Length: 407
Image 1 (tube, rainbow, N blue to C red):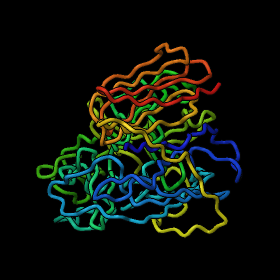
Image 2 (cartoon, helix red, strand yellow):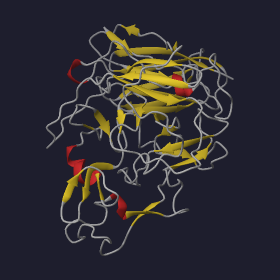
Image 3 (tube, rainbow, N blue to C red):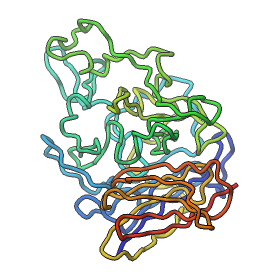
């Protein structure tokens, strides 16, 4: 018996369009909800509940992803159920005052309910040695000092069991797909969306896609000022302060985002982008930072919704019977406007082929060698509105899914 979790439908909504209780947008529908499938240590995976009011979205999660995680070399911590309820503003606005620093701990959630952490590992240079806690300068780079303990999905557990990513969540989407706009993969606590590494080359018009480049440049200085750690022992890049924001050197601003159109926000929104280099390695500041663009609501991970609230109910779980084979996947959105995103579950067989057919049996699109724990994008922008069949094949296992293309 194969269980297939259906993603909730991602509804395109312009950022500047007012939102009322009866309307739902990607801030509500893009969370990957699940109440039955399990991940690490048989804990329920992904997001369990999404509630919303006129002004807030509340996301309940245990911070356990559906894909396989671990091991974590040199890290003694073990992921555990977090029972988080996080709040996100539904009407995010730019902070025109003093920017809010992204602190240690959870600063937002990936779409699967896993915590997003900032670029620091929680130690700073005290003048003679590393000291625990954030400092005003010379904070350690989490990728450099903790990267050895990251698993293949580039995540690891905190001392309290909170599994999280400081950097690109590579198992949540296909970070090697440079031909399509990356999917929406999370939200920051200021309510603005977070995308993968690729966006439209033009901030105002959908079209060609490029990797979004950070505007932070590593200093070439041979020493650090103000009694910083010696470069001879701790090379440039060991501290996040070694990176200098240089406007115009990349695509993104000081917060690691930009105002642009996206598939989910065709009318425009501010959006953060995960940053990686041309070899797909994480690039500072990785996700957000070092400050939020917007006005931050609550950074607590144990919110009690004020009410009255509406519970968002996505499509229910579907079950497929396969003879001795496992093909588990998620498709979102469906109905689709332009791109259908296909996520292959960690428990899959390898090398699955996905083929899109029209109702006359003609093959229109195909993606070959789909692998476990990877997300793929199928471009349907030039396909006429109507009903289609997406067929997954691996050996003698076959699964079909109806896809609706909207006008």
